[in-house]
Image (cartoon, rainbow, N blue to C red; front, side):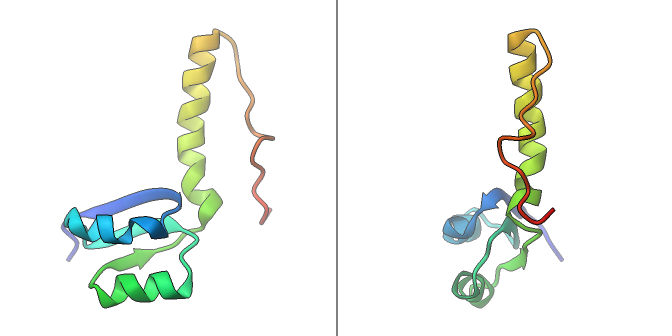
Length: 86
C-alpha cells in the first residue's frame, strides 16, 4: 500500500533521495533514466514516469492563470514549451 507519494514535475530524478527521506513510498516524475530508476527501486521507492512534458503541463496551466490575473488579460503560453512528442 502507498502511504505517501512524492510528485516532482519535469525531470525529478535528482529528488529520489529527498523523496525517500520525506517518507515517500512512491515518486511520480518524468525523465527517469535507468540508473536513477534502479537507485529508487533498490531503495524501496516505487516509480511512475508519465513523461517530462505531461508532468509539467498542470503547473503551467496554474502559472498561466496567475499571470493572466496579474496582467488582467488572457495570456497564451502554449507556444513557449511545445510537447516534442506531439
